[in-house]
Image (cartoon, rainbow, N blue to C red; front, side, top):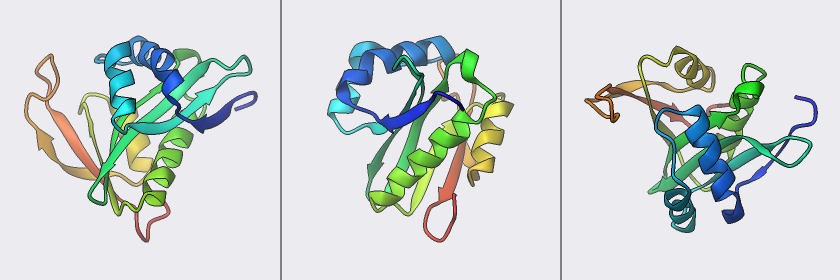
Length: 151
């Protein structure tokens, strides 16, 4: 990914990340809710283009030795170039660095591309959450062991 740099999420990224989230995901973050979430401990990795614009992100939170990958988004123009895989790998590295042994996420069963991305990163199906999304679609819960795994 020529011209792309990754770095840690900072509070000033909230607006750009929320905009990316809304543009690329069915249920994206609002500016204020993401800013509050970052202030309350959500962290992650962002990918920036040569002009410094955020074109990808992976957001997570941790508690009690577990990480939850909250959201991964990549700008449409940058998809299918490995950025999602890179961001997920970086997010899992951050979770390991914070002492987490396992990571979880929810994904739409209908989102085959995202499920494949997560499976390549080491996530496996662990259950379902009924009617999890606003439109009534269930969520597939996925789990990734972080200790002893290459991620």
